[in-house]
Length: 609
Image 1 (tube, one colour):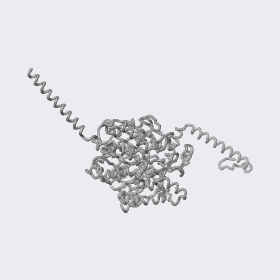
Image 2: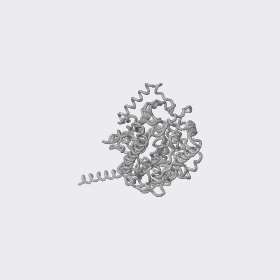
Image 3: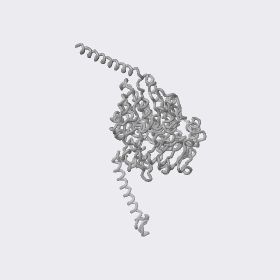
Image 4: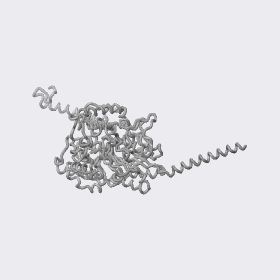
């Protein structure tokens, strides 16, 4: 009996000890600093120097403040198109491993449905939202998705608890309407269900309004991951009139002057070496003096709207920051700010198909009401080349103007610093995971691996770079390619501006890619091309069809999609061809009666008399 009591006492003491231990662990967990919140802000088509902190003209005090208190990267690279960049950001994986090797609008039929080119996040691809939700985070998203266009491919299928997402590559910023003929409407979805927009909709305002609502409606005891991919400054470029007025006359000197101004500011800020040559102009570039006085006024106004749209986005980012400060969450929040690619060069005034569609749907590209409802704003290739300075060319191409974009990282434990070490879009996800103490790698069966690098050692000063000096970094989208190795870069560009040939540049001394070293350094070129070939085989990069032209492919895909969206158009087009044939035959008969018999032959070449 006594032995039983001793045994019971020992068991009781052990139980009390375990309970005390559990209580101590619980108390320690309660007193430990909570995991930080995460806010990822993505601008659309913004260049390296568009924001004030990087030397831009737009008034962007809120983003500039994040840059001032955090790490401002000067050698960050995205892909040259939106979906691949977004896939890389959210997964930490090379875009070919995600299913978004390119975007649907430029996809050739030869690649449609192939692995890596499915235009959907493929099996085994896990997003940041998937990973963070598993760690107890609230996962929230509002803005442009463009990682799948059907309801079951929206953010709720990829780890987001709440989402209000635009499936398309873009849309109007004032109302629910498409911006190109490729889309039948503006496909907005809330949690996977088609949704309407409020009457006071303006894209940047709405994105922050809805995000604040989600933050208020979800479990306040959990940290949050908030993803805000803005529509600014994707076409159509639109902004409130009062903000547009602030930039009146700022761009009246034209794009040639703006290029020189930005190049000089880039040198002053150390974004390029003091003796760096200005980037070469793209083929077909017009000088400002080539335009009529009236056209200059219209094009200057387009850049005023561009700057105002940047400021509007920054203003609403400031509203989100103010909300977090008011709720005591700001100091424990990581902020990531980046752009998905360089500036958009497309025009809205030189394409017959687009002009006809504008007339049908009620868009205009004129000066009156520019930036307001019904205005289809754009800046065009010359302003795009100017805003891409000090880089060459712009969006679509893997030249520096298309891929070198801003990156700001701020948050707890990050000292104010300027970081000139290389960083890639794939590095953001592993950086955030390491920052919060989550595993980056893993051997989960069927899960594709993260290919990016954590920047945490760089942010904390433990390493100068996440990459070894001669380590290869590669970007490829639809044949537009860049491979970086040390100070050097090889690049090739497809039609309509490129010729598909490899070029070699020393981007440390020549970031504008003005001097091609391919002939001077043939061995280095051969070595780097071989490294690209190895990358392409490893990642499953498909060769582009012969004479692939991204602009022509866009037109082809737009027409195909229009016929799918509006089946009656096929009948109209077919009927139009029949009518044209009848008219031509009738004209032939008339001409033959008038002239053919007297001459004994047909007056129409190639037609027997």
